Image (cartoon, rainbow, N blue to C red; front, side):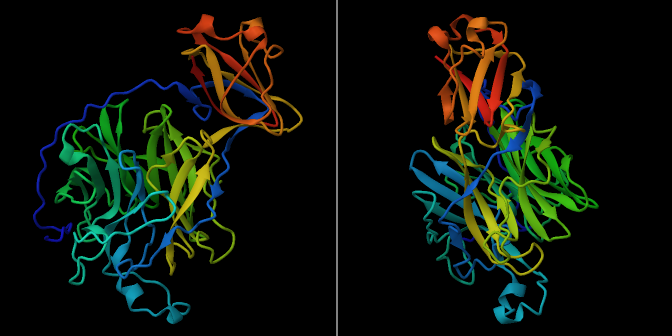
Length: 466
């Protein structure tokens, strides 16, 4: 098979059929969404607490063509049909500075990259922890196809699994910079994530794109949205959109840090009716990268949550596998018991020598961020804006094992704080109970306002059920 190389030659057009995606109303309300919250007292919105998996790091640069993982730019998808975790990642497969500098000499020489080439590699796992890098035989490198490469050339490839596209040949989509020689954004397609079309250049996006580019369908906008990077006097997150994944708008800025703390990349995904962004913030003085959290109602207006505090914190031990840089994968994997945040990790600073790895951090369900009591022994309050009641039972996700949580429906004494049975455990979709079996039956189909009383508790989300 002829190697697929993203180059200036043979850039082909693709005939596209638009997907039949539709927006579904969200019945889960995340408290980090400011549209849900009318007022608060004695609480603050705080990031959730991640746990780094004890199996970390999950895999490393252990193949000859994995010359330098750099930022890894991982994309992890759980294949429901085959019950398989699938990962596309982007190491530098050609990097003379690394290949020609012995490890013993790196302490006295600074890393100075030149003539590099990135590729997209593929790995898979049954449990998301033990990974295999299959010999695919698809792409040639140094006269050999016995490797796990699926494409040579693209920089910062975002891989999207799009099962609702009417054209089965476009079920997998790639959004990337065409290459380090072709400094133009591009798109490609695949029926299986392994065999890809030649790229279609998208020069109208008009960005350098030297970051982890990612794209997704926005049901609210009725378009594909691409997230990439502008670079002026600092690195900025930029947004573009498309009806067909081929013709895009000029990218415009949607998020920035400052010159000292720059927004290097942002992996965006839709969850519970909002858009969440895993923002990689580059500390230019420390030469390290950390992963923070932002949210948006529409992919255009973004708010960072606890700016300056990492959602996935770097190790504080120099030389540890994720001391230097953390680059979150494009989309978390959601299970019934946890949220899996895969990330590229490195043990050295951003612009110098470092070894790279794939790693995993986990969050409790709904646990990206929630309101937390400021003073442990003093209750706090969260009052919602009117929300549609879609079921007779109210469910909550909260960490209340050290304190308690009570809920009142405003304007109804039978559903007040005094009648509410306190929740005193860490719960996911825990059912709120009131005295005498009272429930929300009379309010189904109507808007209601809720008031939560938190005592030494963090509240993440609520929903309704019948």
